[in-house]
Image (tube, rainbow, N blue to C red):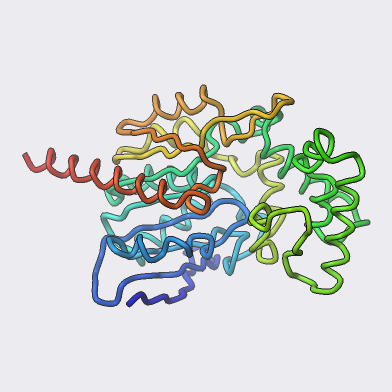
Amino acid sequence: MICETDHIFMTGAGAKLHYKMVKRVERDNTPLVLIHGQGMCVEDYRSIFEPLCENYTLYLVDCFGHGESDKNAGLYRCNIIGDAIAEMIQKKVGNKSVLTGHSSGGILAAYIAGKLSASVKGLLLEDPPFFNVQPCEYENTFVYKDSFLVSHEFLRQTKEQEYIVYYLEHGYIYHYLGQRFLGKDWVRNLAQEAREKLKAAPGAIPELRNIPAKSLHGFLYWNKFDLLFSESFYTGEWFDGVDQEQILKSVKCPTVYLKAKTRYGKDGVLWAANTEESASKVMRLLKNGYRKTVRSGHDIHFEKPRHFLKAMKILEKMMRKQEEEGTE
């Protein structure tokens, strides 16, 4: 039987961090800390709770600005979030943990693995956007055009109150599809349909006629997300006080780098977390890394859970090998 419990951890600085512990009642498994990506929360991993609980006790953390954790723009920095989660791990999880993080959560997981190098035995990086996510790097990327820029412009206007409606009308991907396939009025009609649906069901994810529900997966937890977190990426402040290269150099444990296949739109925009050049740089900087590329969208554990679980098996083999070599 799987048991779920919710917990609040107060950091030494007085900030509230929510985490969920999920485990099989009859087992005391290795701790696995999971850190979600931007806009998500602990619930984004629910579809893989059961298979992961075969070998692990799960500790799923809501980053600041997400879920039930504190929402305060002053907390939206890699080092502040990373230090808070590291403190939680030391005080509530214990030694010899395994970490995994998706997207920006992958950058956080790498930061924590370096900071707690004596306590972390393995790391799975799920499509982290290393070297294509700061202002000097991101201008021709999907995440900038379809997320950071759109949310920044939404925060600067007052006409539209519903972010989903604003996104559908101004987001990069729907304009791209409209211009190439569906006509110039498509995004305007799409936004109007969403606006009408939200009037009837405020706060719900609107069911739209011409869009598959899974394409709005990123909005499932939007009512618990602070858009100022996205703004910290737009401005680059999320990286204040840290260096991406140094984060990766500090990781000493076995690491699986799970990357979604690199793709570009017909307009040359990068439709991936990072380029092949950036991915190769990640591998050069990791001391004990293994790269696995899969044909998937960015949210691999949701879209292709089988590949995510296979990557965990690869990491387990790497950790066993290191343990065996360490005892010889």
